[in-house]
Length: 194
Image (cartoon, rainbow, N blue to C red; front, side, top):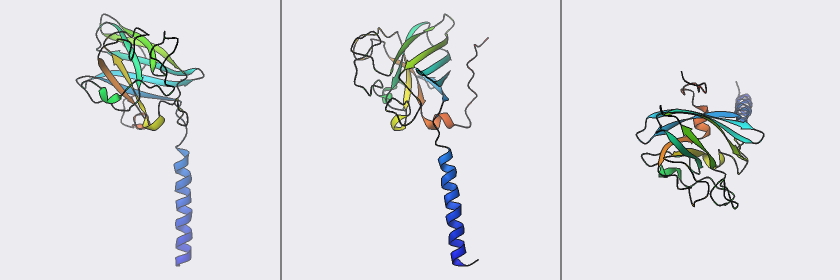
């Protein structure tokens, strides 16, 4: 094979690889994340799915203390325990006040509280209005590398600044493309456990 033919062949292969690489750039319509407690133990999974009105979170966890807990999206895709402060502040690209009940709010990362039963099991379906999994939007959970989902010790009161008096961060899961594409991840099961 002469030099010109080899160059043409390499250009064709490069173009084909470039086109194939672009095929994987589709927006996600659903993904999952595993949540971990302060000791690094898995509590279960949360499935996120794109809906016309926002992102739906199907939460199935085991191991939280019974009662109400706050749920928030945080700005960094980092869940370093035991306090999860590396997750940063609530996801708030519109610079609103905290709280679903606040007339000057809410943060995009403010989500409804969840309830854990007396056996430590949590099963909830909540919506994150205006959120998306589409990468090009400033409201995307995958914007600038991703975000994280954090659960707090007690319920969010919906008004108090900056985080609803909801106590310590007790569980965290990363929301990233890498997390969504992990091949070794357990299948996410959103069915109730027996």
